[in-house]
Amino acid sequence: MSTRLTTVEPRTHQWHHMSRFEGVIAMATQPVGPQLRKTGIGVVGDVPWGTHFFMFYETKEDLLDTLVPYFKAGLEAGELCLWAVSDPLTVEDARDALRKAVPEFDRHLAHRSIEIVRGRQFYLSGNHPDLGRVMRTWAEKTDSALARGYAGLRVSGSTAWLERKYWNAFSDYEDEVNKFISSWRMTVLCTYPMAGSTAAEILDVTRTHQFAIARRNGGWEVVETSELKRAKSEIKRLNDELERRVVDRTRQLADVNEEMKREIIERQRAEEALQEAQADLARVRRALDMGELVATIAHEVNQPLTAIVTNGNFCLRRLESATRNLNEVKAAITEIVSDGSRASAVISRIRGLLTKGTLNRTELDINQMIQYATVLLRNELTANRVSLRTELACDLPRVPGDQVQLQQVLINLIINAIEATSRSTHGMREILIRSAKNPDGLLVQVQDSGPGIEAELANRIFEPFFTTKAKGIGMGLSISHSIIESHGGHLRTVPSSTGALFEFTLPADDAGVS
Image (cartoon, rainbow, N blue to C red; front, top):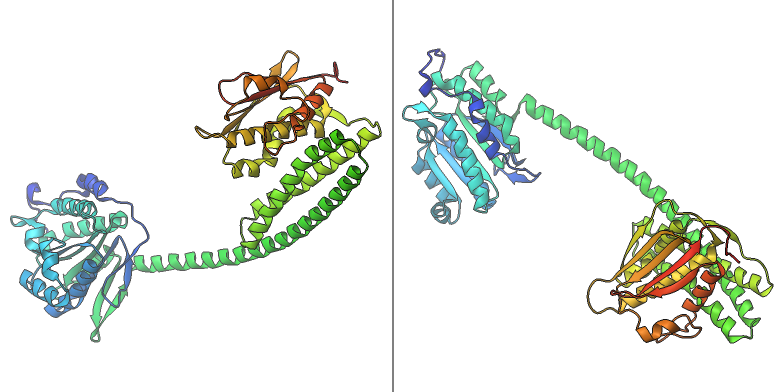
């Protein structure tokens, strides 16, 4: 192979431009993951899908020494295999060698898990290369392999049949394969005879493949190409980047641990605040003789205390399981502090009531209060598998009122809705909260998907100590009704075809507020 012919064959016998086969390339393209495939060739090791490499050989033994373990590994890995052989190997040589190396080789052959064909037959149509057909074959074989449940396609083709006048066309073909194979679920090992190859041809082959293997001093070695060197450089860069990220992540984890320690301290302070609030509550209870007032205090303080205990237990479970989801723990601890403050505010308000003090009236955003109440009760919603949906109107007027009292009304209505919805035995468990403008100011509705309120009970639902709950004391709705009335509004039930619907109105200015 010392000279190169420049004779141009008729177009019908030449390798057509690769653009003619862009559709074939697209058809053969498959999403390729990072899986490594065993080559069976010790010096090469594992390679990813889309690997296109070659070897120069001198003898039949060189070919068998590499290709037999190559295809043995492919069959063991569940790949569809295709071996196109040329001189000095025959199809019979290849079959005999694989039969000795691969258990149950004949079964693989019968199932067509491996095909062994003659190279000339595979690459030529008549006496001329039909490389377009070869490209279509790769596409069809890859699609067929995946459709039949194989992991992918493993290929080896010999170029011993290649005549010099077709060399340029074949080099172009190899170059296109090399460009696009990275997105194919294929591995390809091409074999080139060393005898008669010129330096220019060796450079052509090196340029159109990712790397090479060659025998040296009795053993096989990997010959790095510029592309392989670039790949190794990129891998080193990625490894360096990974190490940097590990260092950064370690530093972040140290910061998170410090934050967790601070949160534990805050939880301890919250527990101390809770104990102090409980002591205040005990002193208030000892000062009261009236049963109705005791029931009022118990009902109003029980809701924030229940939320505190729920969130405290949540934190303990998360800390005991060494959770890394510190955002959940932080949110729960924040709610503990908030509920502790709310419990303290309830007690302060009752003390003010006993001393005939005035309540703290401010301009309030009812939508913010609704959103805050839903955040406080999210664990209760989750525990009862109830979903909550809101339809909040924009540009609502602010209302004057006592934030603690109105927040208590919202929480009481939502808790009642959760309890009613959780008793539902059919359909979705859902609560809907709406806000809207109203001729009197604004309107708030809380609707559940529970069993609803019986008509004969609707008129008694706001009476003190009237309850339909097995463990209720019947003060929640009575207190809520009194609070809304004291703010110049109205709380009532509304007939509904789905569940229970409570709504209250509030004036948007000081008119009617006592």
